[in-house]
Structures are given as C-alpha cells and as structure tokens.
Image (cartoon, rainbow, N blue to C red; front, side, top):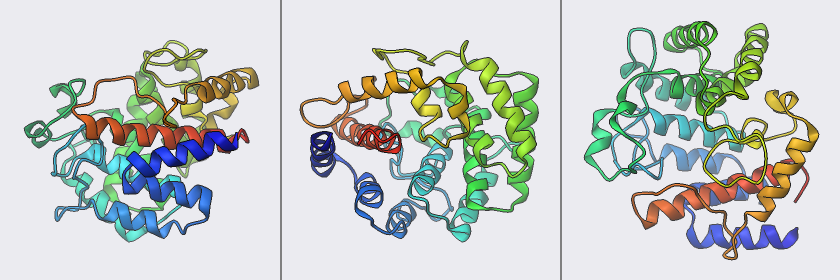
Length: 286
C-alpha cells in the first residue's frame, strides 16, 4: 500500500496542477490548509467569480459558476474556511443567477475557448446542478446571504417536488444535505437520495467499474459522510478494491472521457488520482 501512495505522489508531482499538489500536502504531509486557500484565491477575477480553467475541460479565463463550485470543493477538501472570500464568491453567483436563485454550469463566454465536447450548450440553462452543490459548500463556509437563502429554498422545493434520476444532481443534493443547518431538511434530502439513486443515470452501484459514472465512494467519500448509511459494507469494500486495481503503471488513475487537450487530460488525471488517494486513505486502505 505504501507503493500505491509513493507512485501516485510521483504522478501528481510530475503532472498535476499546483492546487492538487497543495491538497496532497495538506492531507498527507501536514501542510496548513491556508495554502490551498491561497491557490483558489488566485483563480478569482475582478467580478468576484473564479475563472482560468479551474474545471480542466473548460479552458476559458472568464468566471463560471461551475468554477466557483469546484473552488469551494477544494476549500472543503482542505478543511479551510474563509467567510469573507466565500461571501465574495456568493456575490458573484447572485449576479449570474435567475429570479429563483438558480445558476447554470457556464455562461456563454465558456464556449469562446477550448472546451470538451461533452459540455454542450444546454449547460447555460440554470438548474439544480450545480446550484445545490454551491449552496451546500457555502453553508459549509458559514455564509449568510440573501441569495443563499433563496437558492437553498428553491433547490429543496424543486428537489422534493420532482426528484431527479441523475447521479450528478443527486450528488449535489448530498452536498447540501451534508452542510445545510436545518438537519430535518438534511434527513429529508437523504431520504429522497436513497429512493432515487438506484434508478439514476450515471450511478454505478457495483464493480468492476468499466465506464464513466459515480460510485458509492463519490457519495460516501469518507466513513462519516451523511450518505455512508446508504451503502453496505460489502459495496464500499468492493469499490475500494476496484479503485486500487485501477491505478495505472505511471502511478495515476485514468479518466473515462475525451478532454480538449493533453493539458486537460493530465490535470484531470491529477484530480482523479488525488480523489482516489483521499478515498483510500479515509477508509484506512492507505
């Protein structure tokens, strides 16, 4: 198991972005989470949003809602809270939201730069994904904001009225359930996730994993995740074993889609390699 970590670290040092390298140092070398905060702040534009290809498949410099979502994810992964910075991100999100508080993945500007083919132009339509994810992560930061209150209420109402049968959106709901202050709503969200997940597109309940999708380890990335109770121990163990087997000879983990270029591929592989290490470490495999 030590060899798994050593080889993966070498891959990250060779190929990954500074963000993933700093996150590795926080989790495995005791680096202060403040350093991750500094890296994420460097992606911020003058409009308050995050840009500069923070999602590796989208190479535009302009701010995008999905970039904000992923930046907040990095802060949560590092265990770093900065209310002032998070509130500035919330101000940007409010500026690009609709009247109900929903935001799209991207603004039209995203399509003026190289972008992966799977991001079609339907992603400029506001929806639960990524809004629910952003709401959950802003609650983690402790933000108090009119937009966050409106968007959280909208997302919950829509989710309960018409539960989505799509794994990514359910994953966004799980992030909101994890961090929303109202624990009764959190349990209601979890109940809907449990009822919907087995029917959801892009959910992979069993192993081996041979295509792109979300597995139980995406929903229960740590043993204390709110979604851990949705899966049996044998499911978790099976996916941990399969995850170990997926490490490639170069030390990294593969991705399952076509990126827009070599840099995107290496950056995403760095991200997925780090994710694999986090899950294996959290469950005591490493």
